Amino acid sequence: MNETAAATEAATRTATDSADGDRASTSTDPVVVAEGVRKSYGDVVALDGVDLRVEAGEVFGLIGPNGAGKTTLVRALTGTTAAEGTLETFGVPPREVDPQRIGLLPQSFGPPERLTASELVDYYGGLYDAARESDAVLRDVGMADDADAWYETLSGGQKRRTCVATAIVNDPDLLFLDEPTTGIDPAGRRSIHRLIERLAGDGTTVFLTSHAMDEVERLADRVALLRDGSVVAVGPPDELIAEHGGDPRLDVTIDGDSGDAVADAVAAELDGSVAASVPRDASVEPTDHGLRILGIRPEAIGGAVDALGAAGVAFESLAWSEPSLEDVYLRLTGEAYSPRAEAVTPGAGDGSDAAAGEADAEADR
Image (cartoon, rainbow, N blue to C red; front, side):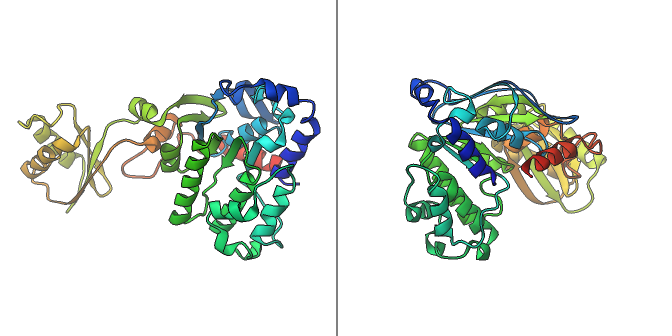
């Protein structure tokens, strides 16, 4: 049985008993509450005292490395795995929530392939007392033109969009989306983004898990970062970026070799700059393709160019960027960004994250 159907069946068993509890919750109550949530798979600790609250109508983003416990937390919140601690959805334990109120798109989802996209949405719609018309749902995810195509013949992105349709066919009050845009092309991603924004605008609470930091930064009202089974930061994306994102930077592609000596020469010229816009604490470091000047605002780019010229550095291009949620992710997950290499995880050979991922995969089976 796949995870969506399992969640539906589990919730259905106790939906009648929980009806009074569902009605007792109000729009001012948090939709999701987790307090001191713990879960282990053998010796691997997947969740280690997770605390979070998701308010009604917000898009809540959950980010973190592979094996951090994101999928396990989603399972615990949807009642498809047991965990220690307090777990409440709409004021009651997750397994007691009316399945009509929950939509779930797991990261790994393998629906029957010998059905058309329309038949597949009809099938999942039939699990609920009330469901939207399949044609309308497929139109929402950009699959109206391929509604009659066999699922097995669809591209990876089309399959994922069809799976999103199965998660919203019941018009849920709370929607869990685990990597909803994996494998989807840019146009399809924009379509899904607009759908999430429209659902949230209509009052649906969305719990979004994604490795696409730009996606989370755009869509989420608040973000929680999970590392080694614990929440290490939570807040609106702009606040997290301001606190943890670091400085704006100017990447300089230079014509020739770069190194510490070149970086020091440019830094010396910046220190001696008479331009008021150039900050005194700007720093320079070498990269694979040139230099990176940290702490430079747009109005100081002219001063930086003057410093490069004074240091005798000929450059091919300049690229200025502000810190983003990706910078927050790299800093708070313990991963260190090196300008001369890709992100590196200290102690990455200890197998802890891999073990957690394998434990989650085992639970899938």
